Length: 399
Ligand code: GMT
Image (cartoon, rainbow, N blue to C red; front, side, top):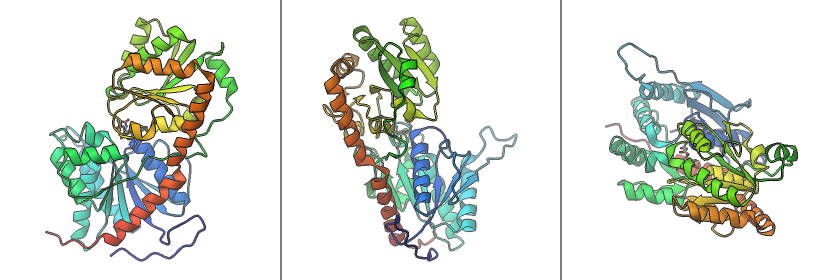
C-alpha cells in the first residue's frame, strides 16, 4: 500500500528500507517530547526522513539536519471557541503531510490526544484509498494519571486498540496499561534511551568550584516541577543530608511547583544551599559535577532524568514506583525507597555520600547500567518495530 522505497545500504543502517516517518509529540521539555525529538534526530542521522508535526518546534530540535522537516500546526482561533480546536487542526495537518510528503508511517508520542487524532487522520485518508500505519508510544502520565481518568479513558483505550503498533517505555507501564484498560493489542516494550555522545562525565571542575566552593557534595534533581515529582520530598531529603554532610542542592527545570518550593526553602532556611536553576539546555554539564541524583516521584513510567544522570556516572536515590526499578538497581546504581519515605531516602543518600569508595563503585555501576539503554541499541529496536508494523498493516475497509 505504501510506496516502495529505494533500497539503501548505508553501513550504519541495519535495515534495507529508508522510511519517511511523521513524528507527533509535545514540543516541550517533558520526557515524551525529549524522547520523540531524540528519536527523530537519531533516525535522521541513520538516513530516514523525519517530519515533526506539532504546534511548536520541539525544544531539543535546535540543530539543522537535512533529513528533518518541521510542520507547524496552528489551531485558528474564532470568537465562538473557548478552546482553539487543536485536535481538529492536527488531524487536518496529518492528512496533508502524509499525502504531500508521502509518509510511510506516523509515530505519535503520548496517547492524549495524539493517538486519537492519528486514528481520525487515518480514517480520513482511507476514504481516499490511502493507508497510513500508526505507531503509538505510551510514555507514562498519558496512562497512569491522565489517561485513566474517566474524562479520557474510553478514547485512550480505543485509540490504543486501533493503533497499528503500540510501544510502552517500560515493562511496568506495559503492565499498568493492560491492567487499567481493556487492551486487545500487543504492547511492545521499547525503553527510553541515552546518547553517550552527549551524556558523559566531562571535566567541569571550574563549575564544581563555583557551585560548591568548599568542596561540598552536590545533589541534583531535574524535572518539570509537577506535583507528581514530589519536589518537597527532594528538599526534605536534602535537609537531612545537609545536616550531616556539607552539601548543595541543584534544582533544574521549571513548572507549577517552583514558587511553592522556593518558599519552602526560605522557610527551612536553605535558600543559600539550594539553587533553582530553571530550564537548562546543557543538563549534562550540571550532571557532570553532581555526586547524587534524587528522584522522589510518586509515579514514573521510566525516569529518563535518572538515566541521564546515570550516564554521567551519577548514582540515583529514587522511589520504587513504576519503571524506576527497571532503571535504578537497588544497592548497585543507587537505592530505591517507598514513596514519601524521606527518612530512608536521606539514610541512603548519606550512606553513599559519606563513603568515597562506595560512591566511586556506585558511579561505575550507574554507568554500566546506563549502557544497557544506549541509543545505538534502542534505535534499531524502533526501526525493527516499524518494519514489523509496515509488513503487518493491511488496508482496512472503511466502515
Ligand atoms: O511527567 C513527566 O515527567 C513528563 C512525561 C512526559 O510524558 O512528557 O514523562 C514521562 O515520559 C518519559 C519519557 O518516556 C519517562 O521517562 C517519564 O518517566 C514519564 N513520566 C512519568 O511517568 C511521570
